[in-house]
Image (cartoon, rainbow, N blue to C red; front, side, top):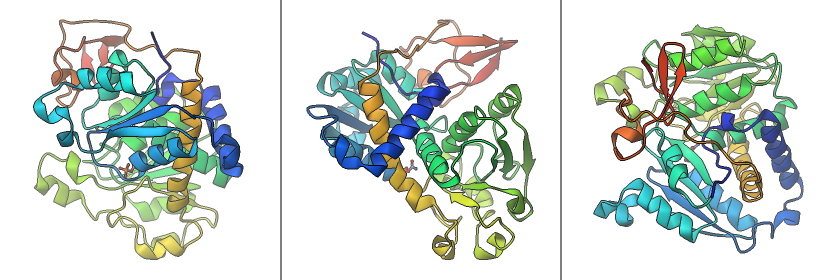
Length: 355
Ligand code: CP
């Protein structure tokens, strides 16, 4: 049986996103109406990587909907530590639960899980690839705080290379009219080519820039991100990048009065603690909105009739060139690529290689 999953937000239509966003805002206004919406349903949270917000907000969402939760937050406490592969774990747990949210360090792991699951799968972050429920959270927050998801100048600052929240948000906001992006990063952590191609093909203007101070006066939204130590090959590479961007009150002096400052969190030191008191700081509200976004998503997927299409173009002879792709670790997985001009695009992790 096939289910509707959430692997990449762009697998769903924009009208479906809008339905989920408005349901999240309805739940936020009158939560008690939904207190039994998932009675007798079980959510499994399988977190192969650490998390505070995503895991606990999923669990909170299901509990507030009257459902129950199972799962692990450390795979070493599960049979993964005995060598159980990803898809056997998924087959087993999806037989116990009605819906499953998984975070995994490898890119494309959520797609692999969905192929074997007997229930809907939600991607709660797959390596440096995508984080669609963070994006839903961001969209709910922007709709609530800016009143619109269109006509915004959005600055994204910090780790634009490995930042899965950044990739997912750009892909989402470029589907709404008249948005433009200012991509603020060092050369080493600049946005991947496939996201640039995405913006170009969706006629979404963008500019790359090094200086946060230079960009800030133009912005309606500033999306700060952490330099993710865990994504670097060496400590030395991380040390060269950390502390390049710090948002403080001095920089905010030249910002618009209605700037909306977002951050997926956790923060290390890229936002000075004094900024928390500024009414433009929305990142704690954003984390609360994550519960409503996930409540709306769980209700939507448990009631879905449509199915997510997963793999379309099998090609067992080719290996994905991304060493962090799930297919290079769980090597029994069926390899599958879409053709895009003279490129092959891995259907798990979106890595591109020449035909
Ligand atoms: N925003 C986010 O994904 O936070 P966690 O890593 O704490 O889940």
